[in-house]
Image 1: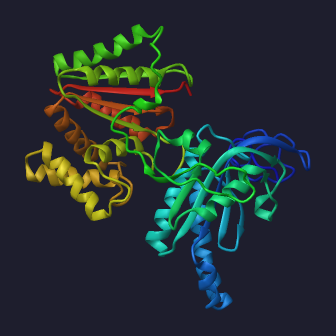
Image 2: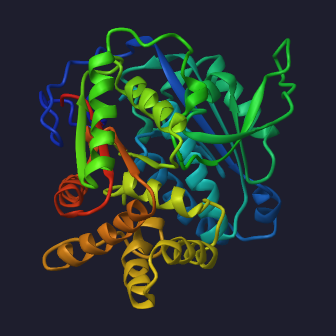
Length: 418
C-alpha cells in the first residue's frame, strides 16, 4: 500500500496515481530505505500505568481509545504520521513519508496542542519530546499495519528526552530549538543525562507559540542589505504616502524562498522603529496546515495587539480583547459589536463564519477595529505567506484596503509564486 509522496494518502498497490490528490505514484521497491531528515515526536501519559492497574481491561480500553483518537487526529492535522502506539505512548514522524520545510515547527505546534487539549478536555497529563535529525527511513513501511518507518539516534534520543520531560512539559533538542525559535516561545531547561549519551543533551522546554508583535529581529544578521534599495524605497514611500494622504496602501512582495522578502520586511520595521512618531506594527502568518486557520494571520494580529496568551482561559482572553477594543473605540454599542465579531479570531467560539450575507457585517466589524487603531497611530499590517491563505483572508485584505478611509494604513503582503 504505497503512500503518496505529495499528500501522504495510502493507496492500493495497483494504483499508479494517488486516489486523493491525483499525483503520480512512483513504484516503491520492497524494503527500500534511505536517509532522511525527520522530526520525531514521542508522547506518553503520566501515571497511566499505575492507574490502569486498578481498572478492568475494558475500563482501560475505554480511557485509551478517545486519547488515541484525539492524539492521532492532532498529529495528522499538523502533517505528522503516527508510526506506533505502545500502550499509552505514541511515536510520530514529521518529514516522512511526506516532507515539509517546516516539519520541526509542525511537530512542536502539534505537541503544544496535544498538551493543552489533553489536559483541558480529558484531565490527563503528558510528557512529550521532539527531536530533529537524520534517520534511516523505510519507504515501503506501512505504519497502519505496525511496520516501523524510522530508526536512528534521533528516534532513541526522543524517547530518552520524553522520559525526562516534566509533567505536561515538552522538551526539544537543539536542532529543533534552532529551527523553531522564531515561532515558538521557549524557556531554558537543564541538560538531560540520557542513557547511551557520552554528554548531557542540551534541551529547551516549549511554552507556547509566539504571537509576534514585530519581526524576529534577533534572527537577522547585521549584514548590509545589498541590491534591494529600490524595493525598500517602494515600501518606505508607500508608508510615507499612507501617512501623508491618510489613505490605505497595499504592497505585495512575491518571490521564491530565500530571495529576500522577509529581509525587506525587517528593513521596513527598522525604519518604523527609527521614526520619531509611534507607529503600530502588527504581523501575522498564514499556515499551510491545520483546521480553523482560514484567518490565522489575522488572529495573530488581534491576539498580539490584545496581548492574549495561549495560557489565558476564555474569560481572561475576552477581558483582554474587550479592553483592547474599548481603548480605541469609544461607543459602547460599537465595542460590543466589534468584540462579538472579533471573538472567533482569538479562539472564543467557532471559526468566523463569513459565508453569504454575514460576510459584509463581519468584514465591517473587523475593519472598524483596524481603522480605529490607525486613527490613533499610523498602522502597518504585515500578512506573511499568503500563498497558503484561503480566499476568505484574501478577500478581507482587499476589503480593508478598498474601504478603509481617512486613516494612515499600510498593508504589506508576502507570498511565493505558487
